[in-house]
Length: 506
Image (cartoon, rainbow, N blue to C red; front, side, top):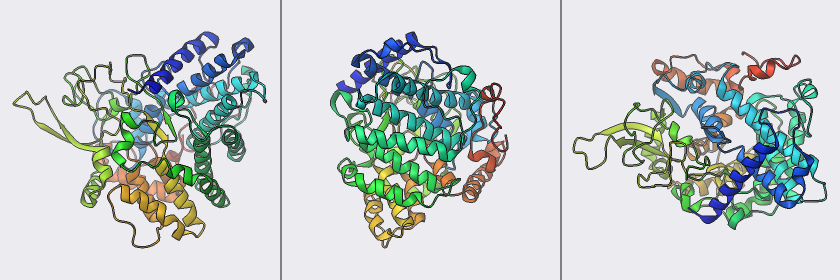
Protein backbone atom coordinates (compact mmCIF):
# COMPACT_ATOMS: atom_id res chain seq x y z
CA UNK A 1 0.00 0.00 0.00
CA UNK A 2 1.32 3.40 -0.91
CA UNK A 3 2.71 5.65 1.80
CA UNK A 4 0.61 8.65 0.74
CA UNK A 5 -2.57 6.63 1.14
CA UNK A 6 -1.57 5.62 4.65
CA UNK A 7 -0.85 9.24 5.52
CA UNK A 8 -4.25 10.35 4.30
CA UNK A 9 -6.00 7.60 6.23
CA UNK A 10 -4.14 8.55 9.41
CA UNK A 11 -5.27 12.13 8.93
CA UNK A 12 -8.83 10.93 8.42
CA UNK A 13 -8.73 8.94 11.64
CA UNK A 14 -7.29 11.91 13.55
CA UNK A 15 -9.84 14.25 12.09
CA UNK A 16 -12.70 11.93 12.96
CA UNK A 17 -11.53 11.76 16.55
CA UNK A 18 -11.28 15.54 16.80
CA UNK A 19 -14.67 15.98 15.12
CA UNK A 20 -16.19 13.62 17.65
CA UNK A 21 -14.72 15.63 20.50
CA UNK A 22 -15.90 18.96 19.15
CA UNK A 23 -19.46 18.36 18.06
CA UNK A 24 -22.34 15.97 18.30
CA UNK A 25 -23.05 13.74 15.33
CA UNK A 26 -26.59 14.12 14.09
CA UNK A 27 -28.18 15.16 10.87
CA UNK A 28 -28.02 18.71 9.62
CA UNK A 29 -29.25 21.34 9.32
CA UNK A 30 -28.76 21.22 13.07
CA UNK A 31 -27.70 23.45 15.89
CA UNK A 32 -24.06 24.40 15.65
CA UNK A 33 -22.03 22.97 18.52
CA UNK A 34 -18.56 23.79 17.22
CA UNK A 35 -16.27 26.05 19.19
CA UNK A 36 -14.69 28.89 17.26
CA UNK A 37 -11.39 28.05 18.93
CA UNK A 38 -11.13 24.82 16.91
CA UNK A 39 -10.30 26.77 13.73
CA UNK A 40 -7.45 28.65 15.36
CA UNK A 41 -4.60 27.59 13.08
CA UNK A 42 -3.79 25.85 9.81
CA UNK A 43 -3.26 22.44 11.39
CA UNK A 44 -6.74 22.42 12.87
CA UNK A 45 -8.31 23.73 9.68
CA UNK A 46 -6.57 21.06 7.63
CA UNK A 47 -7.83 18.42 10.07
CA UNK A 48 -11.33 19.83 9.75
CA UNK A 49 -11.19 19.51 5.95
CA UNK A 50 -9.97 15.92 6.17
CA UNK A 51 -12.84 15.27 8.56
CA UNK A 52 -15.30 16.37 5.88
CA UNK A 53 -13.75 13.96 3.38
CA UNK A 54 -14.07 11.24 6.03
CA UNK A 55 -17.87 11.48 5.93
CA UNK A 56 -17.71 9.68 2.60
CA UNK A 57 -15.87 6.78 4.22
CA UNK A 58 -17.01 4.49 6.99
CA UNK A 59 -17.86 7.45 9.21
CA UNK A 60 -17.94 5.27 12.33
CA UNK A 61 -20.44 2.85 10.76
CA UNK A 62 -20.24 -0.60 9.16
CA UNK A 63 -20.84 0.70 5.66
CA UNK A 64 -19.43 3.61 3.70
CA UNK A 65 -21.13 6.15 1.43
CA UNK A 66 -20.18 4.31 -1.77
CA UNK A 67 -21.88 1.14 -0.52
CA UNK A 68 -25.03 2.82 0.73
CA UNK A 69 -25.47 5.26 -2.12
CA UNK A 70 -23.72 4.11 -5.29
CA UNK A 71 -24.34 0.39 -4.79
CA UNK A 72 -27.49 -0.11 -2.72
CA UNK A 73 -29.47 2.98 -3.76
CA UNK A 74 -28.16 3.38 -7.31
CA UNK A 75 -26.61 0.36 -9.07
CA UNK A 76 -28.93 -1.91 -7.11
CA UNK A 77 -31.95 -0.09 -8.62
CA UNK A 78 -30.68 -0.07 -12.21
CA UNK A 79 -31.23 -2.51 -15.05
CA UNK A 80 -27.67 -3.87 -14.73
CA UNK A 81 -28.41 -6.14 -11.76
CA UNK A 82 -31.10 -8.58 -10.74
CA UNK A 83 -31.96 -10.68 -7.70
CA UNK A 84 -31.28 -14.39 -8.15
CA UNK A 85 -32.30 -15.27 -4.60
CA UNK A 86 -33.16 -13.53 -1.36
CA UNK A 87 -31.71 -13.81 2.13
CA UNK A 88 -33.40 -12.78 5.35
CA UNK A 89 -30.91 -9.97 6.01
CA UNK A 90 -30.50 -6.49 4.52
CA UNK A 91 -34.17 -5.75 3.99
CA UNK A 92 -33.43 -2.17 2.93
CA UNK A 93 -31.39 -3.52 0.04
CA UNK A 94 -34.24 -5.80 -1.00
CA UNK A 95 -36.79 -3.00 -0.80
CA UNK A 96 -34.63 -0.71 -2.94
CA UNK A 97 -34.14 -3.43 -5.55
CA UNK A 98 -37.83 -4.40 -5.57
CA UNK A 99 -39.03 -0.77 -5.71
CA UNK A 100 -40.69 -1.10 -2.31
CA UNK A 101 -38.67 1.59 -0.55
CA UNK A 102 -40.51 3.60 2.09
CA UNK A 103 -39.67 6.82 3.98
CA UNK A 104 -38.65 4.69 6.98
CA UNK A 105 -35.75 3.06 5.11
CA UNK A 106 -32.64 3.15 7.27
CA UNK A 107 -30.36 3.25 4.21
CA UNK A 108 -32.18 6.24 2.73
CA UNK A 109 -32.06 8.07 6.08
CA UNK A 110 -28.33 7.33 6.39
CA UNK A 111 -27.64 8.76 2.92
CA UNK A 112 -29.63 11.91 3.62
CA UNK A 113 -28.01 12.43 7.01
CA UNK A 114 -24.48 11.81 5.77
CA UNK A 115 -24.78 14.35 2.97
CA UNK A 116 -26.11 16.98 5.33
CA UNK A 117 -23.31 16.18 7.77
CA UNK A 118 -20.85 17.08 5.00
CA UNK A 119 -22.74 20.34 4.42
CA UNK A 120 -22.82 21.15 8.11
CA UNK A 121 -19.08 20.69 8.58
CA UNK A 122 -18.25 22.59 5.40
CA UNK A 123 -20.47 25.45 6.58
CA UNK A 124 -18.70 25.49 9.95
CA UNK A 125 -15.26 25.74 8.37
CA UNK A 126 -16.34 28.47 5.96
CA UNK A 127 -18.04 30.44 8.73
CA UNK A 128 -15.14 30.31 11.18
CA UNK A 129 -12.37 31.11 8.69
CA UNK A 130 -11.78 34.45 6.98
CA UNK A 131 -12.52 34.74 3.28
CA UNK A 132 -9.01 35.96 2.46
CA UNK A 133 -7.22 33.20 4.40
CA UNK A 134 -6.77 29.46 3.92
CA UNK A 135 -8.15 29.68 0.36
CA UNK A 136 -7.17 26.12 -0.48
CA UNK A 137 -9.04 24.65 2.49
CA UNK A 138 -12.05 26.87 1.93
CA UNK A 139 -12.07 25.77 -1.69
CA UNK A 140 -12.05 22.10 -0.67
CA UNK A 141 -14.90 22.75 1.76
CA UNK A 142 -16.94 24.46 -0.94
CA UNK A 143 -16.28 21.61 -3.36
CA UNK A 144 -17.45 19.05 -0.81
CA UNK A 145 -20.53 21.13 0.04
CA UNK A 146 -21.33 21.39 -3.67
CA UNK A 147 -20.86 17.66 -4.09
CA UNK A 148 -23.22 16.89 -1.19
CA UNK A 149 -25.91 19.16 -2.61
CA UNK A 150 -25.42 17.62 -6.06
CA UNK A 151 -26.29 14.17 -4.72
CA UNK A 152 -29.10 15.46 -2.54
CA UNK A 153 -30.86 17.30 -5.35
CA UNK A 154 -30.66 14.50 -7.89
CA UNK A 155 -31.76 11.84 -5.40
CA UNK A 156 -34.30 13.71 -3.28
CA UNK A 157 -35.26 16.73 -5.39
CA UNK A 158 -35.77 20.05 -3.58
CA UNK A 159 -34.19 20.15 -0.12
CA UNK A 160 -33.29 22.79 2.43
CA UNK A 161 -30.48 25.09 1.32
CA UNK A 162 -28.15 25.89 4.21
CA UNK A 163 -24.89 27.80 3.70
CA UNK A 164 -23.95 28.78 7.26
CA UNK A 165 -24.34 27.36 10.78
CA UNK A 166 -27.97 27.45 11.86
CA UNK A 167 -29.96 26.82 15.04
CA UNK A 168 -32.34 23.88 15.21
CA UNK A 169 -35.53 25.93 15.44
CA UNK A 170 -34.58 27.89 12.34
CA UNK A 171 -33.39 24.81 10.48
CA UNK A 172 -36.65 22.91 10.80
CA UNK A 173 -38.55 25.95 9.53
CA UNK A 174 -36.61 26.06 6.26
CA UNK A 175 -38.64 25.18 3.16
CA UNK A 176 -37.54 22.87 0.38
CA UNK A 177 -35.62 25.27 -1.84
CA UNK A 178 -36.29 25.20 -5.59
CA UNK A 179 -33.91 22.94 -7.48
CA UNK A 180 -32.73 25.88 -9.61
CA UNK A 181 -31.74 27.79 -6.47
CA UNK A 182 -29.74 24.85 -5.17
CA UNK A 183 -27.95 24.47 -8.51
CA UNK A 184 -27.05 28.17 -8.43
CA UNK A 185 -25.27 27.60 -5.11
CA UNK A 186 -23.61 24.42 -6.38
CA UNK A 187 -22.26 26.22 -9.44
CA UNK A 188 -20.92 29.11 -7.36
CA UNK A 189 -19.17 26.72 -4.98
CA UNK A 190 -17.56 24.73 -7.79
CA UNK A 191 -16.40 27.83 -9.64
CA UNK A 192 -14.80 29.08 -6.42
CA UNK A 193 -13.13 25.71 -5.86
CA UNK A 194 -11.82 25.60 -9.43
CA UNK A 195 -10.34 29.09 -9.06
CA UNK A 196 -8.53 28.36 -5.79
CA UNK A 197 -7.16 24.83 -6.16
CA UNK A 198 -4.23 23.36 -8.03
CA UNK A 199 -5.16 21.13 -10.93
CA UNK A 200 -4.34 17.96 -8.99
CA UNK A 201 -2.55 17.06 -5.79
CA UNK A 202 0.01 14.32 -5.45
CA UNK A 203 2.40 12.78 -2.94
CA UNK A 204 1.05 12.87 0.60
CA UNK A 205 -1.97 14.87 -0.61
CA UNK A 206 -3.00 12.51 -3.39
CA UNK A 207 -6.72 11.87 -3.21
CA UNK A 208 -7.65 15.42 -2.32
CA UNK A 209 -9.65 17.32 -4.92
CA UNK A 210 -8.11 19.81 -7.31
CA UNK A 211 -9.47 22.22 -9.90
CA UNK A 212 -9.77 19.40 -12.47
CA UNK A 213 -12.21 17.63 -10.16
CA UNK A 214 -14.12 20.85 -9.51
CA UNK A 215 -14.52 21.59 -13.20
CA UNK A 216 -15.34 17.96 -14.02
CA UNK A 217 -18.11 17.99 -11.43
CA UNK A 218 -19.31 21.36 -12.72
CA UNK A 219 -19.61 19.90 -16.21
CA UNK A 220 -21.56 16.95 -14.82
CA UNK A 221 -23.87 19.34 -12.97
CA UNK A 222 -24.62 21.17 -16.21
CA UNK A 223 -25.30 17.86 -17.97
CA UNK A 224 -27.67 16.87 -15.16
CA UNK A 225 -29.46 20.21 -15.41
CA UNK A 226 -29.82 19.71 -19.16
CA UNK A 227 -31.66 16.44 -18.59
CA UNK A 228 -34.75 15.39 -16.69
CA UNK A 229 -36.38 16.91 -14.68
CA UNK A 230 -35.13 20.45 -15.44
CA UNK A 231 -34.57 19.85 -19.19
CA UNK A 232 -32.54 23.06 -19.40
CA UNK A 233 -31.09 22.90 -22.91
CA UNK A 234 -29.00 26.02 -22.25
CA UNK A 235 -26.85 23.91 -19.93
CA UNK A 236 -25.36 21.88 -22.82
CA UNK A 237 -23.20 24.74 -24.17
CA UNK A 238 -22.10 25.52 -20.60
CA UNK A 239 -21.06 21.91 -20.09
CA UNK A 240 -19.17 21.92 -23.39
CA UNK A 241 -17.29 25.07 -22.43
CA UNK A 242 -16.26 23.69 -19.05
CA UNK A 243 -15.07 20.38 -20.50
CA UNK A 244 -13.23 22.09 -23.36
CA UNK A 245 -11.21 23.98 -20.77
CA UNK A 246 -9.98 20.82 -19.02
CA UNK A 247 -9.95 18.15 -21.70
CA UNK A 248 -6.20 18.40 -22.40
CA UNK A 249 -5.35 18.06 -18.71
CA UNK A 250 -7.74 15.13 -18.33
CA UNK A 251 -6.25 13.48 -21.42
CA UNK A 252 -2.84 13.64 -19.73
CA UNK A 253 -4.31 11.49 -16.93
CA UNK A 254 -6.11 9.07 -19.24
CA UNK A 255 -5.39 5.48 -18.23
CA UNK A 256 -4.44 3.42 -21.30
CA UNK A 257 -5.47 0.03 -19.84
CA UNK A 258 -8.97 -0.30 -18.39
CA UNK A 259 -8.13 -3.07 -15.91
CA UNK A 260 -5.30 -0.98 -14.45
CA UNK A 261 -7.71 1.76 -13.41
CA UNK A 262 -8.85 -0.36 -10.48
CA UNK A 263 -5.59 -1.56 -8.95
CA UNK A 264 -4.02 -0.47 -5.70
CA UNK A 265 -0.81 0.46 -7.50
CA UNK A 266 -2.59 3.03 -9.67
CA UNK A 267 -4.93 4.62 -7.15
CA UNK A 268 -5.18 8.42 -7.44
CA UNK A 269 -3.26 8.25 -10.72
CA UNK A 270 -6.08 8.34 -13.24
CA UNK A 271 -9.23 9.34 -11.36
CA UNK A 272 -10.14 12.93 -10.46
CA UNK A 273 -12.20 12.44 -7.31
CA UNK A 274 -12.49 9.22 -5.35
CA UNK A 275 -13.35 8.02 -1.86
CA UNK A 276 -10.14 6.93 -0.16
CA UNK A 277 -9.97 3.54 1.56
CA UNK A 278 -7.25 1.51 3.26
CA UNK A 279 -7.17 -1.82 5.07
CA UNK A 280 -5.66 -2.44 8.47
CA UNK A 281 -8.56 -2.62 10.89
CA UNK A 282 -8.68 1.16 11.45
CA UNK A 283 -12.30 1.53 10.26
CA UNK A 284 -11.03 3.10 7.04
CA UNK A 285 -11.67 0.15 4.72
CA UNK A 286 -14.37 -0.17 2.08
CA UNK A 287 -17.50 -2.24 2.68
CA UNK A 288 -18.64 -2.38 -0.95
CA UNK A 289 -17.08 -5.73 -1.82
CA UNK A 290 -19.10 -7.33 0.98
CA UNK A 291 -22.26 -6.73 -1.03
CA UNK A 292 -21.23 -8.54 -4.21
CA UNK A 293 -23.46 -11.54 -3.63
CA UNK A 294 -24.95 -13.56 -0.81
CA UNK A 295 -23.57 -16.72 0.75
CA UNK A 296 -24.38 -19.14 3.49
CA UNK A 297 -23.71 -18.10 7.06
CA UNK A 298 -20.80 -20.50 7.30
CA UNK A 299 -17.78 -20.86 5.08
CA UNK A 300 -15.95 -18.40 2.87
CA UNK A 301 -17.79 -17.44 -0.35
CA UNK A 302 -14.61 -16.76 -2.36
CA UNK A 303 -11.91 -19.07 -0.93
CA UNK A 304 -9.22 -18.36 -3.53
CA UNK A 305 -9.86 -14.63 -3.40
CA UNK A 306 -10.39 -13.86 0.27
CA UNK A 307 -9.18 -14.86 3.69
CA UNK A 308 -11.09 -17.54 5.60
CA UNK A 309 -13.21 -15.29 7.83
CA UNK A 310 -14.63 -13.18 5.00
CA UNK A 311 -18.43 -12.94 5.06
CA UNK A 312 -21.03 -11.42 2.76
CA UNK A 313 -23.63 -8.83 3.67
CA UNK A 314 -25.82 -8.56 0.59
CA UNK A 315 -28.48 -10.31 -1.40
CA UNK A 316 -27.71 -12.59 -4.34
CA UNK A 317 -27.28 -9.79 -6.88
CA UNK A 318 -26.11 -10.78 -10.35
CA UNK A 319 -25.27 -8.94 -13.54
CA UNK A 320 -27.92 -8.85 -16.27
CA UNK A 321 -27.36 -11.91 -18.47
CA UNK A 322 -28.05 -10.02 -21.71
CA UNK A 323 -25.32 -7.51 -20.88
CA UNK A 324 -22.91 -10.33 -20.05
CA UNK A 325 -23.65 -12.08 -23.35
CA UNK A 326 -23.19 -8.93 -25.40
CA UNK A 327 -19.92 -7.95 -23.75
CA UNK A 328 -18.54 -11.45 -24.23
CA UNK A 329 -19.52 -11.51 -27.89
CA UNK A 330 -17.87 -8.13 -28.43
CA UNK A 331 -14.76 -9.28 -26.54
CA UNK A 332 -15.04 -6.11 -24.49
CA UNK A 333 -12.02 -5.86 -22.19
CA UNK A 334 -14.13 -4.10 -19.58
CA UNK A 335 -15.96 -7.34 -18.92
CA UNK A 336 -13.15 -9.33 -17.30
CA UNK A 337 -12.00 -6.25 -15.40
CA UNK A 338 -15.44 -5.70 -13.89
CA UNK A 339 -17.26 -9.02 -13.76
CA UNK A 340 -16.51 -12.62 -12.85
CA UNK A 341 -18.67 -15.48 -14.08
CA UNK A 342 -18.17 -17.48 -10.89
CA UNK A 343 -15.74 -18.74 -8.30
CA UNK A 344 -14.51 -22.02 -6.82
CA UNK A 345 -16.24 -23.31 -3.71
CA UNK A 346 -12.96 -24.25 -2.04
CA UNK A 347 -9.21 -23.83 -2.29
CA UNK A 348 -7.32 -25.76 -4.96
CA UNK A 349 -6.13 -28.17 -2.25
CA UNK A 350 -9.69 -29.50 -1.83
CA UNK A 351 -10.32 -32.23 -4.44
CA UNK A 352 -14.12 -31.98 -4.37
CA UNK A 353 -14.38 -28.29 -5.03
CA UNK A 354 -16.82 -27.06 -7.66
CA UNK A 355 -17.12 -23.92 -9.75
CA UNK A 356 -20.12 -21.80 -8.68
CA UNK A 357 -21.63 -20.08 -11.72
CA UNK A 358 -22.65 -16.50 -10.90
CA UNK A 359 -22.14 -13.33 -12.92
CA UNK A 360 -21.07 -10.90 -10.21
CA UNK A 361 -19.40 -7.49 -10.03
CA UNK A 362 -15.89 -7.89 -8.60
CA UNK A 363 -14.34 -4.60 -9.74
CA UNK A 364 -13.72 -3.46 -6.15
CA UNK A 365 -12.85 -6.79 -4.55
CA UNK A 366 -9.17 -7.19 -3.74
CA UNK A 367 -8.57 -10.82 -4.75
CA UNK A 368 -5.76 -11.81 -2.44
CA UNK A 369 -6.38 -14.42 0.26
CA UNK A 370 -2.86 -13.86 1.60
CA UNK A 371 -3.43 -10.16 2.31
CA UNK A 372 -3.06 -10.02 6.07
CA UNK A 373 -3.85 -6.30 6.22
CA UNK A 374 -7.51 -6.97 5.38
CA UNK A 375 -9.11 -7.57 8.75
CA UNK A 376 -12.85 -7.83 8.01
CA UNK A 377 -15.50 -7.91 5.30
CA UNK A 378 -15.63 -4.10 5.41
CA UNK A 379 -11.87 -3.56 5.45
CA UNK A 380 -11.22 -3.65 1.68
CA UNK A 381 -8.46 -1.31 0.42
CA UNK A 382 -9.81 -0.31 -3.00
CA UNK A 383 -10.70 3.36 -3.51
CA UNK A 384 -14.08 4.14 -5.06
CA UNK A 385 -13.96 6.57 -8.02
CA UNK A 386 -16.68 9.21 -8.17
CA UNK A 387 -15.20 11.08 -11.15
CA UNK A 388 -12.61 9.62 -13.52
CA UNK A 389 -11.32 10.14 -17.05
CA UNK A 390 -14.17 8.40 -18.84
CA UNK A 391 -16.75 10.64 -17.13
CA UNK A 392 -15.20 13.68 -18.74
CA UNK A 393 -14.67 12.02 -22.14
CA UNK A 394 -18.18 10.64 -22.48
CA UNK A 395 -20.06 13.58 -20.96
CA UNK A 396 -18.04 15.98 -23.10
CA UNK A 397 -18.86 13.89 -26.17
CA UNK A 398 -22.53 13.87 -25.20
CA UNK A 399 -22.56 17.66 -24.84
CA UNK A 400 -20.83 18.06 -28.21
CA UNK A 401 -23.42 15.84 -29.90
CA UNK A 402 -26.24 17.80 -28.31
CA UNK A 403 -24.59 20.99 -29.60
CA UNK A 404 -24.35 19.67 -33.16
CA UNK A 405 -20.64 18.77 -33.03
CA UNK A 406 -20.68 14.98 -33.28
CA UNK A 407 -17.60 15.06 -35.50
CA UNK A 408 -15.56 16.61 -32.69
CA UNK A 409 -17.01 14.10 -30.19
CA UNK A 410 -15.84 11.07 -32.15
CA UNK A 411 -12.23 11.12 -30.94
CA UNK A 412 -13.29 10.91 -27.30
CA UNK A 413 -15.76 8.07 -27.81
CA UNK A 414 -13.19 6.19 -29.89
CA UNK A 415 -10.58 6.51 -27.13
CA UNK A 416 -12.97 4.85 -24.69
CA UNK A 417 -13.80 2.12 -27.19
CA UNK A 418 -10.18 1.48 -28.17
CA UNK A 419 -9.20 1.09 -24.53
CA UNK A 420 -11.97 -1.49 -24.24
CA UNK A 421 -10.55 -3.44 -27.18
CA UNK A 422 -13.35 -2.37 -29.54
CA UNK A 423 -12.94 -0.84 -33.00
CA UNK A 424 -13.38 2.87 -33.60
CA UNK A 425 -16.86 3.90 -34.69
CA UNK A 426 -17.35 3.83 -38.46
CA UNK A 427 -18.99 7.26 -38.37
CA UNK A 428 -19.82 10.10 -36.03
CA UNK A 429 -21.17 9.01 -32.65
CA UNK A 430 -24.84 9.23 -31.76
CA UNK A 431 -26.49 9.55 -28.37
CA UNK A 432 -27.20 5.82 -28.53
CA UNK A 433 -23.44 5.22 -28.81
CA UNK A 434 -22.85 7.34 -25.73
CA UNK A 435 -25.53 5.45 -23.80
CA UNK A 436 -23.99 2.09 -24.70
CA UNK A 437 -20.47 3.13 -23.75
CA UNK A 438 -21.57 4.55 -20.40
CA UNK A 439 -23.47 1.35 -19.65
CA UNK A 440 -20.39 -0.82 -20.18
CA UNK A 441 -17.76 1.61 -18.90
CA UNK A 442 -19.21 2.20 -15.44
CA UNK A 443 -20.48 -1.22 -14.39
CA UNK A 444 -20.57 -1.35 -10.59
CA UNK A 445 -19.91 2.38 -10.18
CA UNK A 446 -23.47 3.52 -9.55
CA UNK A 447 -23.89 5.78 -12.59
CA UNK A 448 -26.40 3.83 -14.68
CA UNK A 449 -29.51 4.69 -12.65
CA UNK A 450 -28.76 8.43 -12.69
CA UNK A 451 -27.97 8.33 -16.40
CA UNK A 452 -31.35 6.75 -17.12
CA UNK A 453 -33.14 9.41 -15.10
CA UNK A 454 -31.46 12.39 -16.75
CA UNK A 455 -32.04 10.89 -20.22
CA UNK A 456 -35.78 11.18 -19.66
CA UNK A 457 -38.67 10.11 -17.45
CA UNK A 458 -40.43 7.93 -20.02
CA UNK A 459 -37.35 6.04 -21.17
CA UNK A 460 -36.09 5.60 -17.62
CA UNK A 461 -39.32 4.07 -16.37
CA UNK A 462 -39.68 1.94 -19.51
CA UNK A 463 -36.14 0.52 -19.31
CA UNK A 464 -36.26 -0.11 -15.56
CA UNK A 465 -39.73 -1.66 -15.76
CA UNK A 466 -38.74 -3.91 -18.67
CA UNK A 467 -35.74 -5.19 -16.72
CA UNK A 468 -37.85 -5.77 -13.62
CA UNK A 469 -40.52 -7.57 -15.63
CA UNK A 470 -37.93 -9.81 -17.30
CA UNK A 471 -36.70 -10.97 -13.90
CA UNK A 472 -40.13 -10.76 -12.26
CA UNK A 473 -40.07 -14.30 -10.89
CA UNK A 474 -36.98 -13.32 -8.91
CA UNK A 475 -38.09 -9.79 -8.12
CA UNK A 476 -41.20 -10.48 -6.02
CA UNK A 477 -41.75 -6.75 -5.78
CA UNK A 478 -43.43 -4.19 -8.00
CA UNK A 479 -42.59 -2.59 -11.31
CA UNK A 480 -40.98 0.86 -11.06
CA UNK A 481 -42.96 3.99 -11.86
CA UNK A 482 -42.28 7.72 -11.95
CA UNK A 483 -42.22 7.59 -8.15
CA UNK A 484 -38.98 5.63 -8.20
CA UNK A 485 -37.02 8.33 -10.02
CA UNK A 486 -36.47 9.96 -6.62
CA UNK A 487 -35.88 8.56 -3.17
CA UNK A 488 -38.39 9.38 -0.43
CA UNK A 489 -37.70 12.14 2.07
CA UNK A 490 -36.82 10.28 5.30
CA UNK A 491 -39.74 10.07 7.70
CA UNK A 492 -37.66 11.39 10.59
CA UNK A 493 -37.18 14.60 8.58
CA UNK A 494 -40.87 15.02 7.89
CA UNK A 495 -41.68 14.56 11.58
CA UNK A 496 -39.79 17.73 12.45
CA UNK A 497 -40.81 19.79 9.42
CA UNK A 498 -44.43 20.87 9.04
CA UNK A 499 -43.76 22.68 5.75
CA UNK A 500 -42.29 19.75 3.76
CA UNK A 501 -44.40 17.52 1.53
CA UNK A 502 -43.28 13.99 0.74
CA UNK A 503 -41.98 13.19 -2.72
CA UNK A 504 -44.48 12.03 -5.35
CA UNK A 505 -45.85 8.54 -4.83
CA UNK A 506 -44.49 7.93 -1.33
